[in-house]
Length: 357
Image 1 (tube, helix red, strand yellow):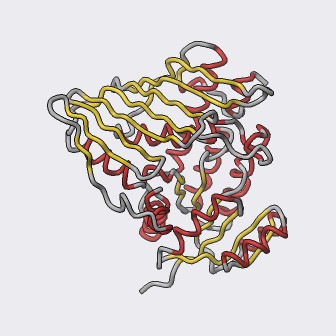
Image 2: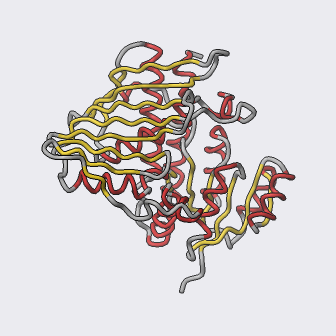
Image 3: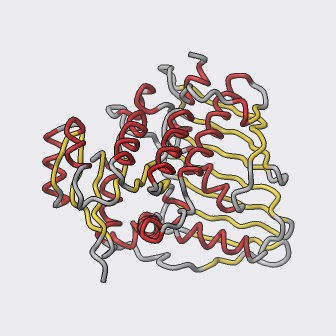
């Protein structure tokens, strides 16, 4: 058996726990180090995670370690580019949380740097590795509903803690549409086979009562092959509500990602709805729960790709595409007009495109 790949976390917030559970379920990887903005947090997480602690200030020392092969970029959005580029320069493969960056210029720089360094990028969009969505995609591929005509995606919850950086545009680059939008958008695209998007046809974004950040976004996309996507991401929901509906010529499929238990239901044009089984559906043990959210399959896929030299199915190019589409949605809401994807400025954050600053 090969020696497990060494993993380092850059960022030690809530999301790091989910990545940790995925690592502990995979014998091919092991967490060896982590870095945080705070020395106290780094040392606390280091004890909990059994990893050597560092701060962002001395991250270079961590990245210089020869026992680190993969770096998971889990820091605030505005720091993704800095941390990803540092890891790539050190010759490490990277797994980068959504959104990939806060500007297209930074996304381009990461993709170019990784290509030059010969390292891989895994764009951490966990939902497309969740069995519930994989089963939905399988049904679409098998022709269960015929040719896809439209897709609806909805991701909503009550919003993150207002004490955190998610509500600060200088760190986040946007609100609900940057926090949840990458999930809603990429999962909807995945279910339809990731067609190329032509333009944002329309977009409506709701601003927080105190102003300065979006709390809900709904936009409509048109793909090159004529599929229409309606994408909604919201911080205004009382409960978690994540679902996707794919409509075809012969019926529809609905995938309920949250709340648990998850469901896939086939609604044929003729006949009764059918509840579709998929692996781990009703197993709510913690490790199985993390697997049901896609984190386990995501890590397995990325590690294998890095080891074999294959391009991940969720790559830096995918992360850049998602950011471009979300930016177009913000700009469309500002203009109240359709926006072509080719017209997005590369040096503006999504929320700057919306607020015009």
